[in-house]
Image (cartoon, rainbow, N blue to C red; front, side):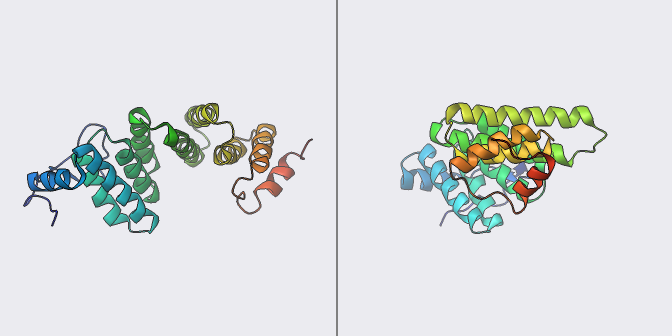
Amino acid sequence: MLAFAEAPPVYNEPGVSPSIPLKNADEDFVRASVAKYGSRTSASKAFAAQGWKLLRNNQRELALQDFIRAWQLNDKNYQVFWGFGAILSEQGKIKEAIEQLEIARELNDDSSQRVQLLTDLGILHSEYASRMPPADQLGRAHRFVLANNRFAEGIEIDQNDAASWRAWAISLYAQERYSEAWIKAKRALDLKAEPFPSGFLERLREKMPESD
């Protein structure tokens, strides 16, 4: 049975949220994982994949443990920080979640996952901006710029990613950039994106009538 060492010390690495209780790896756990999966890198990927599966099944605590195990095996695995960010986001810790996803973005070595990661980052930057006090105009503008940059980076990689166009349209609505929101929304609809949130297109039409 894989297990942590007895009473391992808890610590935090630079760049890792204090909300994530990291622990030193048990040597037996590492040896067993390498024996099973062939290498620390492969074992880390397997634990991260299991973490995502658990998170999608709303088993957040178990998912966190698997992401921590994945980190213990390879602290450069971008999926680990993406997972940490997803958990922090579900906890409402948006700023901390962004920090983890930005680390994942820097470490990302899988082009097939990059657009989705960038879209998630754009969504979080936009959500954080929307939660900031209206009086903090510069702070909100900065966050929205970051959101737009992440969406644009993703679209540059794949111009047919429907989810990116959809998320960008929603973000631009929050920025009160309605004509641009329409452009993105229409592109998302053309690509048969997941339906927009209930009432979104109606609210957009109220702000700015749909143009051809």
